[in-house]
Amino acid sequence: MDNKKNEELLFLKEQLDFFQQIGAEFFPLAPVAAGRSEEAGKRLEIFASLEKTVLSCKKCPLAAARTHAVPGEGNKQADLLFIGEGPGHDEDLQGKPFVGRAGQLLTKIIEAMKFTRDDVYITNLVKCRPPDNRNPEPGEIEQCHPYLLQQIELIQPRVIVTLGKVAAEFFVPHLKSIGQVRGRFQLYRDIPLMPTYHPSYLIRQPDNRSLRKMVWEDMKKVMALLDGS
Image (tube, rainbow, N blue to C red; front, top):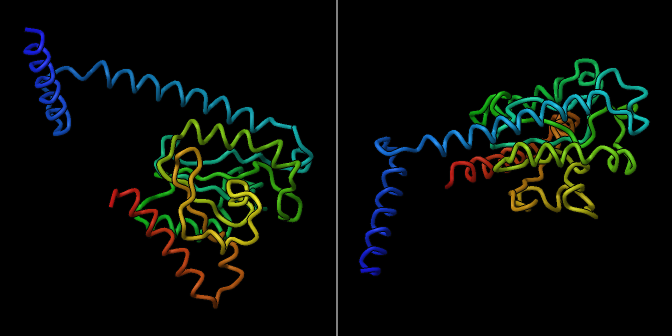
């Protein structure tokens, strides 16, 4: 009798799994959906609190010279997360990431991938502009990077794209050049991570079409992974 009951329960589970996969709605799924919605709502509340913390942060010297801190922008439940090194002049003035010339190029790349900026999330390794757009220093990264790690944990992206050597090196220590790793997925806490060139690097070499081609090849790999192919 017990074996027969176990077989019946197994059959029922297989049937329910099948109906769920095809989207049938004639058995109750509401408690699961409600639970997921509640969890997402809590994450968004924590995210809002995190952004307020970033905006008022004064943990490192970069805060003294900033106009605005730049937490990030976009879909806080995005499948795709872009990470640069730090805000520049235009970003500091507007409080938004990647809005200058490099940002305009990044927007074109995102749109070529059949996304909008509202579909993805865009942020930086450090949230305040380094003077003269220099690279962030180790101490500045040390103070600021916990914000980024919490953003990743809250967003739970399916894929991360790092833009430029500084952002890539945070996840791939002792990196000598971005060319060592670009185009090849790395892993961060089981999340595929694609390092590629920073848009500003492409702008500084407008005649080097091969660089743009390499970035696009990297993005095609990202798209393929997101599409599950």
